[in-house]
Image 1 (cartoon, rainbow, N blue to C red):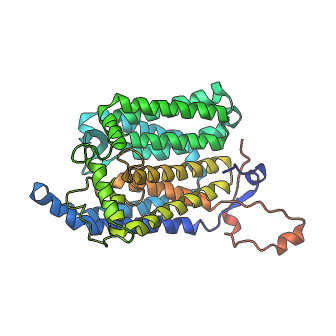
Image 2: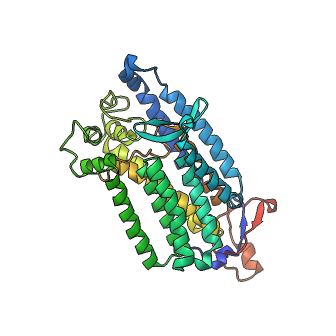
Image 3: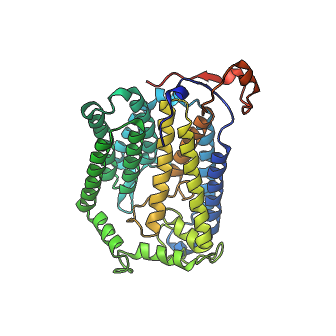
Length: 410
């Protein structure tokens, strides 16, 4: 994806209808996630039996969706440039929330990882907010330092400090390598679009790969997962149990699946069925065809995101759209690839589909921001004279009161 030309950056951006295809894709994925929660809720509660109080996954997810739709409406109605004004504050809030995880009475641990803050009866994952905050901050930072990005000392080193500290914090204190990978890859993708030199990018990629290897070796549970990934069938009843059950579920789905509500794996066999492993349940119930449809929806969502970035009215919106699209891309890829044993298990949710409030609400907030940018996308049009301008058949735009002048990218 190439950056837009200076001609685009200097044109007038008028508010027009947003990307309907993007919105429709997001809400189809939301609806599908609700269907999956309604479908698996009885089986999951039957599995719990008398060991724990019943959990109404469908009701809870419906509440999450309602909050997410409100977040979408908020982000899609706020002019995207206002996010630049609060980029630093948003990042600071995210980092403070991450540090609050170190306070015992404010956080709690699940499955050996401390990733949630207690907010009364609710819980929240600060790392999810950090994804959005880092994208907005980096977009503003890249735009402001456009002329210095090709410099190692003034461009690359500050980038390493900001992104490196952020990723190390998530990887070590939250023990969340999946989110770390998403943050690192999205940040590098934004830097590439912003104008980093290719040799500098190669150095950063090498350094990121080295850091990922060290992060795996330094923690026994990650090293164990990596070993299980290399030899998934060696300990199918022990350390490799999760991926073995995921592959059994996907494999038993065949071409068309066993049918909605007929999954066997959710009856105590597949760990984290409503969350990280939801794609394995999809593969079992809807088969290869259904799985490809879900992958196709994500592929189309990514395509629309990059199209919005390509036609964005200025550097800031172009970089924000790129970063948000990369978040969707890498998070969906890592989740699906882990269920197919193409990458090690990382414990990351499938956007818009997996059970959980923090990820869904932040993803909807990000999608709403992307939709707002789509309202101001531009097309390069050359007019010979006023007659040709009058004859041109342009899409119907909003009135002159919605017209905003976009400043040239610095």
